[in-house]
Image (spheres, rainbow, N blue to C red):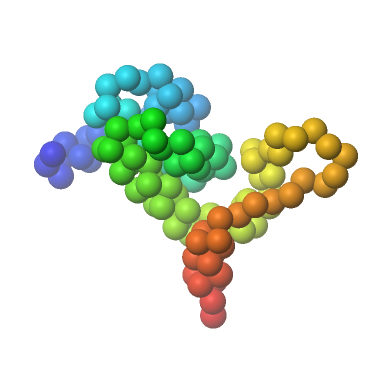
Length: 124
């Protein structure tokens, strides 16, 4: 893929709403196209995108190796974005719901590697 065709692909996906990108990535059967949709999601920093990429990462055994690579790359790209931090996760707890129906306060589980990255990035 040339740099020019890469830029054309990025601009093609930048015009699509995030919810449509998510739907397309979940419906696509072709491995290359699915990888392209996931790569496009890696350009978005919305909480629902992070949640989807996280869920895909947790179920990667069902994916082709190329799609697995794009999931890891996109998740890393999104979580390394300067606008994504611990505050963003705390502000968007509704996107990361607790599946158990209990009267206890929700518990927040954050991957230790991501937490370490946030702490190291915010060091002064």
